[in-house]
Image (tube, rainbow, N blue to C red):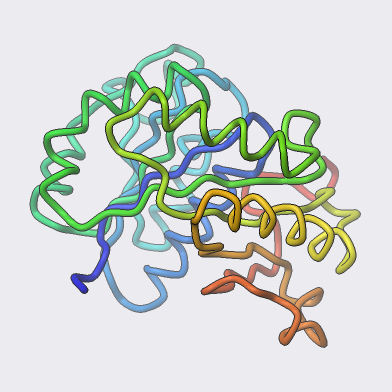
Length: 224
């Protein structure tokens, strides 16, 4: 199987979608590979990857967001598709997509470039958000997205958390719901995003293909 270079990421507001994108990019960068995050979340004005542009650049990660540069205009619903040249060149690209119909419309503009390269389309799920608080809601959300796009979701991400109050039980209870949704949809549980300290002692309980560990939240300060 060809190595996946393009990863599309979606999820409900508050699912931790951008946190996942940033940590996935950091993981790729640690391997000495170049990676670009394409910020196509033009719906949520808060906790977007473009807010971490300076931090990402210091780690060797390129941010593709809008044409304004820096943080100017970051509250405007603007996006640049210049990153599609990186997709076509089969470089590492993570597309941080807006959730819902707005996100699917933006994805449609990327279809021709993405369909020609190996890709995966991931949905980040958090049991502790009201829109995905049951496996049934998770299934409905994914089915809604798949009905709107020509590129169906290919895998799920468990990000069951309550920010700084997260416990191992939160990760595992969310995992149970996400696995129920995954089995119903015939999709793999591709990743679990989990704090490194929480992961100690529960390594054999995580059912995802891969685990992303972090020492601190990238998109939240300790007081938030």
